[in-house]
Image (cartoon, rainbow, N blue to C red; front, side):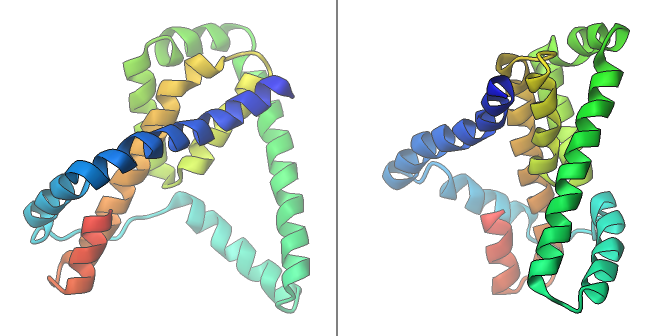
Length: 191
């Protein structure tokens, strides 16, 4: 449990320290907003496309059925959602442990987490595909908890997940910026 908690809080501390570093730089030098404005100007006319979210494609129909069956009672939906969350995490841990033990563990260390730049790339790619850094980083927590990986191993992956999240936001904001409206431009600038 201690290792898993360390793996889970790694993402939190990364976010905390990035804000602690970038916020004063932003206040003093517009370190983030100036490049964001230039990037917005460069990308505003490009346009975008709608993204297919594989997670949403699976979850939304199931959630709709649960909400219908629950009669839109928020407490029942919350209870069912939490039950699914814990069941999913339990089986995710079992699946990851069975996949990673033995030869797969060596492959994981050799080709993915053993090289930080590759780990960073996998974090970006997986987060861009599932469109959620929370999903991506939560995959690593059971691996750290089982002692297969360390927080040091997953750190580049977590950084990649955060980069992947921003890329997803930029692509989604491009859809709004197609018309050149103030709202669309603002959304792209924030992304």
